[in-house]
Length: 122
Image (cartoon, rainbow, N blue to C red; front, side, top):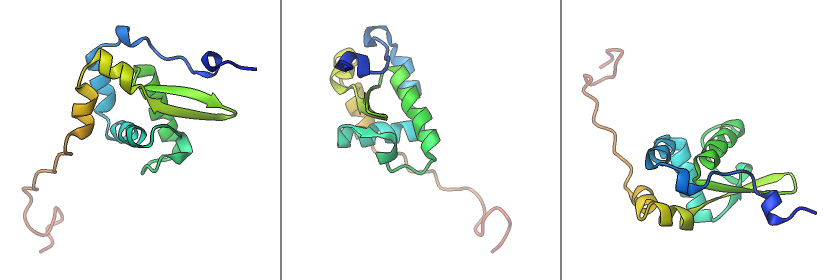
C-alpha cells in the first residue's frame, strides 16, 4: 500500500524556485485560469476543470504548474488530483499569489481598425 508521500508526484522545493519562474508560469492565460479554478475549488482532477482547451492540453499545463512549484499533485487510484501549494507559496512569496489572483483581468484595448473590420466591410 502506498503512503501519502509515495502517492505524491515530484515537485520542487519552493526554497529553490525563483519568482521569475512563478511569474512566467502564470503568464500563460490557461495556466492562470487553472490556478484560479483550483484556488476556488480546493483540488480537482484534470477532467474536472472547465477550460476551453483539450484535456491533453490541460494535462500539459498541470504538469508545467507542478514542475514550477505552484501545484501539488497526488495519485488517487488512476486519477491525478492537483491543488495549489497556497500556504507554501505565501511563505516563500508573501502576497504574490493573492495579488495575481485578485487582479482584475485586463480589458483589451480598442481596435484602431476602421469600422467594419479588417476586410473593409462597412
